[in-house]
Length: 628
Image (cartoon, rainbow, N blue to C red):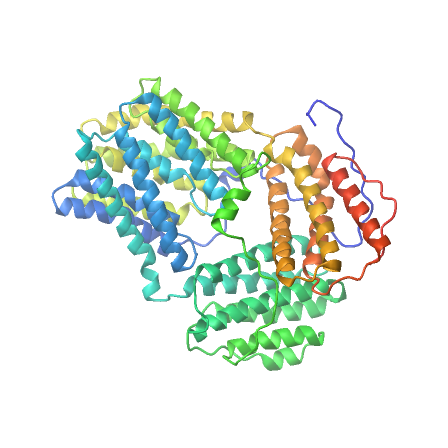
């Protein structure tokens, strides 16, 4: 429905459980708000080493330029997250190959403006699509675009020089790969242990939210963390038959899923006092797991659990977790597995005409081409900073986030120019360059989690120092006269392009996804009454669970859009919450339903009417709903 048509009216009846207020999109002031995230010191120092060590090696070998080129590969480290080392090693190596390939393409087509323009768009679009479809956290297209952009300004006299430079980038990336993987030597199961502990911590918050308005929000967060823990266990490629510690983690993860299912099924039977006591026990589990080691026993809380006035099934589950932590033998139990599917399946699933991921990738690629075209039709020195800035601005998750990034990028960069100018006026040489790069890159990673604008304060001088140190006679003039213009132009193109192109992508998709999820819930309920194949039920349960998570994520994107349609659709919040609640109740149902033919027919009609109402943006008119 277009914005100029009459606004649909959503009529809501009272729902018998509390619903928290709809999440609100942050305003412009949020661009300068500081987050309360803890500072990642290890990541900051490791990132600094990844960028500065190649420069230091180049200096020691009397080839500063080679060291600067190799430091581009050091950006591979920035794709490091808290995934298991087996999966991290593969992901970082693929990122390294991507950065090297992009650098090679930039060198090969450095003098072909039209080809560079197209490649900016292709690299950006493909990167955004892959990261979006696979739901990989991190900087997405940013450093693939950066390696391509910087390589277009580094002269390579012949094909041999092109591949020499590409080889240097690859070696710099290998060094950062080794730095990122070094934690395996100290704590090889650290990432998956942390993922399971985080799931328990969130599970504790979920139990404590029973009967409160934050219940549905905590429910959604818990499913996300359970999925992350399950994925971490699978990505770790551990053999629990050969490793008692691995088997211990597997059981802890399994029991977390069991606790979630039980709480979902018995949510209405909890009273606040019991919820808080159970929350305290689960928080104890999470704290102990955070320091879990191979042969370490955890504090026994059996007596505390037995004193709780809770249902016997919940007591058994909590005691099972305690026994696993005490390294006692337990039998495995069948629970939901919150897996995400294969890489091929997820890439394929995101490629369809209604796919938000695909539309976002196309938008990114189109705007990158526009930015590159503007850059290469001007006479601004080092004009690749225009599409490079645009690439960073557009990585905001929503339209509002993109506008905020544009503001943050512009303000942070202008202030960063003062720092960069001061550094370049000192004309640093030799080891001093490596030291400055280390300090700047480490500072970026430590402070950017607090505020993006604060991070950009150090991004610009760091990137310029790497890119321009080989041209000391021109660096200051380029830096002071062109960078402000480049970055302002790039920010404006990124913001304006995002607002104009696919600005209602999430708003247009939400009613259809809501209807699709409701329809899938009806099909799943019918399956529970007829299907005997347990494996098929598991597969469909996992698909439905993934759709419920996507529904909430899409709603969050809707409220981040600047459009009349988005404002109208905020009225669907109670429907989104109710749909999620129904879906999670179905996921917690392991026993089949016995339905008569009349009930099956009525249910099928009910879900069809609800789905159609959601898709057509109108209030449903239900004839009869069978009692279950």
